[in-house]
Amino acid sequence: MVPPGPCLWWSVINSETEPHRAARGRPGYKAAAGVFAVGMMGTTLPTPLYGLYREQIGFSELIVTVVFAVYAVGVITALLIAGGFSDVLGRRPVLLAALGLSALSAGCFLAEGGLPWLYAGRVLSGFSAGLLSGTGTAAVLELAPPGRRGRAGLAATAANMGGLGLGPLVSGILAEYAPSPLKLPFVVHLGLLTVAALVVCLLPETVRRSDPRPSLRPQGMKVPPEVRGVFGPCALAGFAGFSMLGLFTAVAPAFLTQTLGEHNLAVTGAVVFCVFCASTGGQLLMGRIGARRALPWGCAVLVAGLLLIGASLFLKSFPVLLIGAVTGGVGQGMAFRAGLTEVSAAAPEAHRGATISAFFVVAYVGISLPVVGVGAMTLVLGLRGAGLAFTACAVLLVTAVGIRVRRNLPPAAVRT
Picture (cartoon, one colour):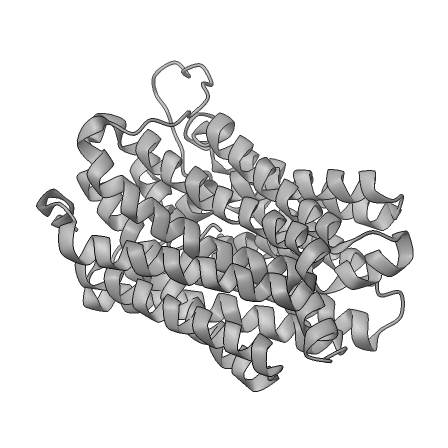
């Protein structure tokens, strides 16, 4: 999640090249945003379909969460190894590589060859998202004409989170109302990827180098000692927020069907779509109130959302779940973007890129390990009990983080 928003700041910080504006008459930043959205769409496309895979292949809810979590492994690997490759190779080659990996992921799901193919598809999807996060955002920003940088930033944020939200919405509708529910969503996505690849070929390359091309080096991660006081609570806020996103994208379908009695796959996709749209709104809201205020407020709103989600499981109420999803999404967006802004402001310039990469790594650990924990708890507590236990733990964590950042965030982090 990548957010998220968030990737906007990361790619700007890591850009080492002089951008060249789009040539007149050629596709610009809006087209690049469309490519970005199509690529990110594939990462959440399987979300409403996990229940169907369970019926077809036969595996537990724990395996569902593991299949989901290997996606985060792919994202983290791509961020650490290839996070800065587009600064050396150019935006277009890396965008095409990311779209190609997304197409390979769709092919794995189309194969329907059992769990190994599902794992492979999720890992490839993670690789694609890791490449797209920084490169897609940088391309959108660099192709914007003078005076429209703010609009381009909004377009990048909307493309990132909007793409993540469109994946389950589209696949849920197709799976519910069209034939071949486990094939058609991926066939449609392959068609969209083909169009996106053609658009990338028409986009102007914004990276130009007059000096010899440097060698490709892994991005890596490092948290300098002077940043750790800021990094700890901000990264924990990101961890908790991504845990909520992971919960919805991995096990929301099972919650809706087994606990709340909602079996319509289109509704499942729409609920997940609402979470990502709310996260986008929270990130935009942070820009208005400032990172210093948005971080504790985002934690507070996230706690309110988690409490509502827990209440929906306890009361078996779909409306309460939907309100909790939207509320939690807003809080996650506020806290995540605020935390990333604080960390990037506090980090020394020489280590800023590596520090922010470390922030993303923590966030993506949050989207994987807790979700697998929920899956494991379902074996003992059942799905409803596991969801309530997760919610209680997340509320305690986010409350502690919110109090910590409100009282003790170092003054150096105020530079936004």
